[in-house]
Length: 154
Image (cartoon, rainbow, N blue to C red; front, side):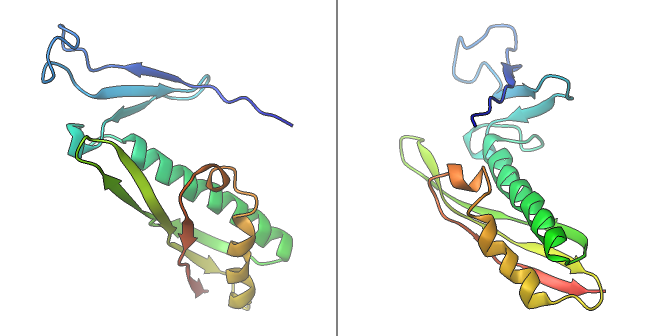
């Protein structure tokens, strides 16, 4: 079954003269998805973007992490593993060419997962391997996505 997803990307960086010169405009834009609040974004700061705003690379890494988390929570619930907390500090490794072209080389998800007392940590860790088979985002990118999870048991 195919799904359609929509959003609107709108450039907000016109200072009044458009792209009349390379330094005459901002690399800012918004993501607007119908019925949801807009997200203010900018280009990667290495490419002249606003470092206080999300950039496309941030959003891709966050999407990978969120997809993994949601599947993890689902599989844990089905397996009878009670997750009390989940926090991820993923890292993406990028490469830039002299002409400005770039790409992700790899991403590593680094979730810290709090489990209920008596949880089987080995079983909780084994869940991660199944997620790469189903995560929509991880299955759509052309670079490896790994994980290095840590756990605490309350």
